[in-house]
Length: 343
Image: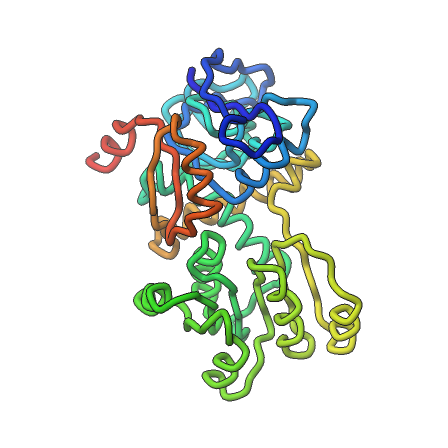
């Protein structure tokens, strides 16, 4: 099979190579061999290209944290899937086990879910990581309610788009920060959130909300936005952040005075620390996503579709291109969705 492998932490495109590898074998009763049809490309992929891997002792490693495809074979202990099933998943890709930038990969049954029937393979491949991140942020950690007034930063990003859909489905009033009039018009056309300027979000938010501060913020930007968001939250508010920057002492003092709750999110943690119960929880999130997608409540906008040979270009697009919509790798297996779509 063809697969991309990351060889070092140089950050250079030459660190990635397209290699011929054996099709992986089922070694455990709960293993499922998936023929990958498409794989989503995420910021974690360019971060790991720079770092080499979270587990450098395992280099070279196959990257790619999410994907969609068909079940090729199952271990003797697998009960929920059979060959031919269309599935999507979040598994591997950070050095501990091979990821989705390959024509075949092994996924444990506990990390696998039936693919939403209304999404193409390319669309479904872009759902697992953003859905899990947004769901854990809004539901698991922040425990979003219909009465919440929510601010989601970077609403045209992958996580931002998914979070807007989830918050809107919950019935909350949703604001989102955007850059430029084009992105503002995109958010307005979707009618799920109120777009406001990233540069002046505090003033615009208060003007529209009649002086009411948000009681829930999802911070996908970091940097100065983390400090500004904490200062802007209403007393007893909750904030979830995806970023890694430490808080200043001033931020900590102000957060304590207002009795704020702050959560950090790393959706890959169950895989990094091999926490089986949390992997099952995340598979349940994918099951909920399947229901929501088939009900038309979540969808995916694809910006670019590239081939496996173009992974380096795809990663550069995510890092530097700032596309509206997802970048996806297609393995060229077209017949699966065409058959399903016409059946």
